[in-house]
Image 1 (spheres, one colour):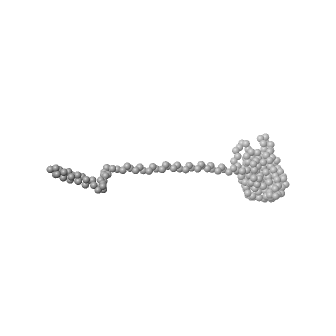
Image 2 (cartoon, one colour):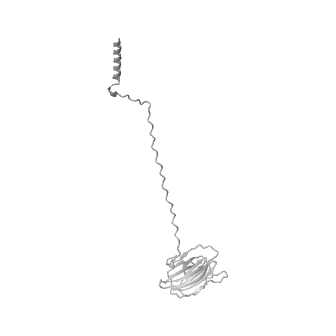
Image 3 (cartoon, rainbow, N blue to C red):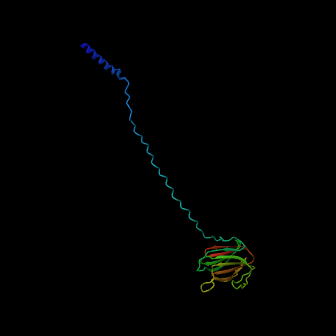
Amino acid sequence: MKRLISSVAGLALALAVAGCGNGGTGTPTTPTTAGFNPPATAAPAAPPATAAPAAPPATAAPAAPVRELPSPTATTSGWTTGAVTVRHAVAVPPVPTLVGIRTARHPAEGFDRTVFDVSGALPGYQLRYVARPVADGTGRPFAMPGRRFLQIRFEPLAAHDEAGTPTVTRTGTPGCPMLRGYVVTGDFEGVVTVVLVLSDTAAYRAGELPGRIYVDVAT
């Protein structure tokens, strides 16, 4: 009986040893993955927004060119024998006053010049050849040396002061090659008319400087 028990015990021990043998080289148990979810990978953070480059400072518009005073040879008309009209908007009163008439020869430049000095704003003016010098209003003719007559009509302008005294000499005979003389033929209600007496029909031009208007006649 003791042998039977010993045999059974030895068999059980042998079976136990066989189950753990081969130095642990038995097939490993595969771990279950049921119900396992890997952690979500966070999306990479967006790069910080780059600020738009600042707009360059606005460039100021260039200033309007400053109108310079005319040079001594600047003119408002070209050389012509036709009629010329120059308009100026002048607020009145007061009416500008003609305070001087001057004449001069310019042989090197090829013209005779008449200058009309004005106190106040420069008036508008019209130039044209006429048959003869006559007084405004009455038509009375003026006897002046010369063969051709260039009329200049200024408006608004006066050739007298508030007392009615003339502010310029009414006639002049400078005796220039082409410009033989001048005569004021009208001075009434803001209109002054002057006629240049010439040796012949000549091309002329008109121009302006501060405080004066000039007329050149070609020689």
